[in-house]
Image (cartoon, rainbow, N blue to C red):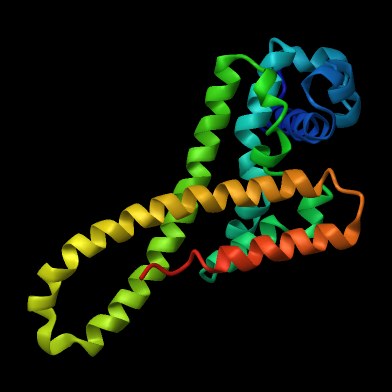
Length: 221
């Protein structure tokens, strides 16, 4: 008798979550399928009902870890708009650095992916692009709110000023893209480096410095 589809999906989810945890902690080469299934508390044979190889589950772990990442969890758990500072603070928080919560694949697999095949690296690239787009969207929203406030102040001359602002708006869009890339690199790099350090005070200084400089990227003049 076949399993209900919901049970099959739950089993797959357990395998993926265990794979994310173990690959993030130990890397591809130090984790076996047996380790993943033991961590998931499932039989070894159940693995092949969902994945055909270790490489297949690794690729899934890279792509799906983002749905369980700190940013995704924060976005799903709140009904209010998150500020860019909220996102940065959560990403650089001790629980994420210490991996007591599900890790972001961009930080967790940053060094491991460099030794993988082009398919895995492409998957990582797509996840990175998604993070940059998210950060850029939040930057645009922040700038949009400021622009609306400015338009109210300048309403008598709005038509004349709109044409004058167009080149500047294009420059601001380019700046937002560059800043989003820089911010993503700083957040990911900050977590990767923090995880290698043995000095808690230095880790705190590092994450505080990243958060401080992130706050300077939220406004484009």
